[in-house]
Length: 523
Image (cartoon, rainbow, N blue to C red; front, side, top):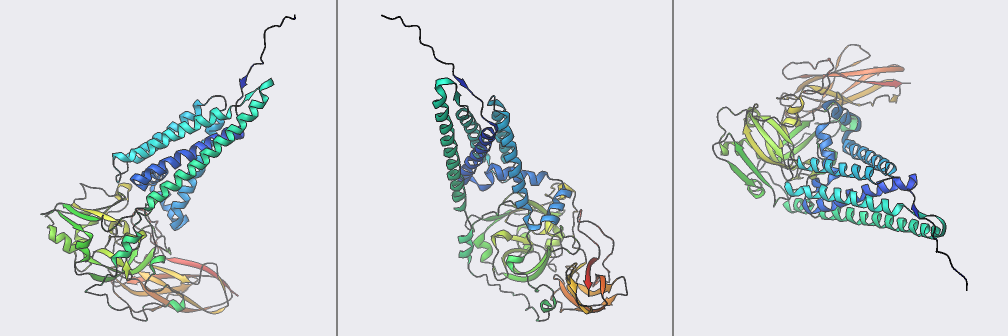
């Protein structure tokens, strides 16, 4: 009989995850947090998605100079650049949180809790979201913290002696858990996107049908542009019409859900449904719009035939009270603008509540179902898209989005001109060079455009037919150019006799000024 001693087992220990695994824990937890938040937002509003809410908050908090730089540098891709930059920062922060949590899950837990709190604050301050929208970032916070701790626990493998097989099982368990998180995040993200798309306004727009004005705009003369000579077409196709706004996602507003409230300093508050506006006698006007972010020679100027109703009619039905100074307009996404009351009541100016654009209902990205269009004023004070609220008030009582950020109050569009051909740094044959472009001075009109070569004498260009004082005017000229490097400059003279200033000014606070000059080479 043999005696047997006590059974011994080798100690078990949990090892901290390697650096790649730690970083992966953070990144996967981030994906889960964003996807769950997006899924919950699908039931409420797309803007409740924490990622988009933080992006919208970043836009609101960005200094004016930086916003202006983004529009100037990235154009209509500025929002994509913002979202891409946010993604890079978030992924980097999540990976670092995972690396910092290799010994303990608490650093990562704190980081994901902080992410969640930021999302909650971003949603809470959105003017277009109600209290229930907080559920989306709250779900994101819970998912981020929970998934991070789950992955961290799975990543800490057992090791030592007889438990080496268990270490392999633990690694397999982490891979399975991580794959499950990735798959679940994909399902949640796609689900949120599909739920959000159920509110798409495309079908509602298609159901509007043709908008037939009782007063049509005069026909565009055949010589209203010199497109064959290098200018843009007189009417800008909807797909090419400039778009500059603060909306990260295009608001989806169906006609059956839309209404417009007029209140404030009025005798009688009014509320109009889409059918109320649609069934009124519609008018059509040809109007050139310009964005205040347009640099000298910039692309943010376009022309369209707009169909809608006179804004003055709606305001007169409400009865504007004495002392009213501005029309404070709010978009469905909470953006605001302030238009001088005198401008919108001026029948000669023709401010509109527009429903249509170039023969069709407004495109979704250009404000469907309805937007404001006030000729002669930069868009940030005159052209609220997806408009749902008009408050008649004073400048002291309300400050609109850009006015709070130091932009000008009245914002009349300045007399400007642009060279469209030749392009900058283009190489051309020496001899006769054709120069062509556009000029604008909305609500005043263009009287003359002059060009000069290499600081030589000014030469008067040939102008296109004038459609009306609220639209741009095309021009062209021919110059004798010897071989070498050259500069060509243009300037406009409006109908008051004012000559476009050569003094350079940036877009802030009320529009850029200066002569447009390009450099080209001839051989």
